[in-house]
Length: 334
Image (tube, rainbow, N blue to C red; front, side):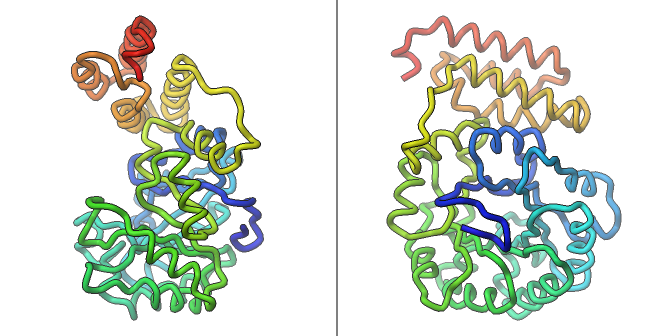
């Protein structure tokens, strides 16, 4: 599979762009464990144009994580075009346009999935961004605004005609948010449309290696994108990659290996951001990580993780959890 001239191999697995999740430390670890492509947290076009420092910081990328995409969102042509030009100067491999975020503060203001209520503007933004930059431009969107407006099959052709290099489809409507099951049948319908020649990336409810394998086999997508299942679990890309490509299997990671990776993520984030925000970014992963599943009465430990304010305090809590895990019998962790 290729996006522009970027060769991503056969059946690649991508890390989805997620606000407050896909910081640089997490992206680097996901890349190490087999993510074929990673994306930054999404970037507000208006904030970027206004030179908001916290937004500009999201453009920081590392050569170690390439190929990497920077995702932008907005609701008017001028700011999206200017933002795309600013992003291009950060030298990502891909610029991705977010037409899929369902949260009220984004979609409710007409951006993200809100654009699905204004298809002409959505297409105009896409055309103008494609024309404004020399990098491959991709789009991530949903099936439609709600069950009565499943526009993706037609929209996919229209977006392709705008000049995008790939399309990611989340198998839900905006109305569904993240509830219910993702519907991959429409994703497969887009992929199997003989008029579609750009890569189609499927997204939604891929949580295991077996689900990733079946997504490729049943729906023929060119790539699979993983979102929430990656929280606190950068090694999931190893597990999924080995399910899709069994010949690449390598020894499983131990619990200690996994906890050491979470600590590494903490130190990368603190070093590259600062202690306060680095901890904020990391503890979301710690609280969600499956590595701690099975610890009796983990709730109090989870609360302590979420309240920790220094690296020393958080490290102590993590290592205490490690000791408790190592003291459990294997059946308790099953």
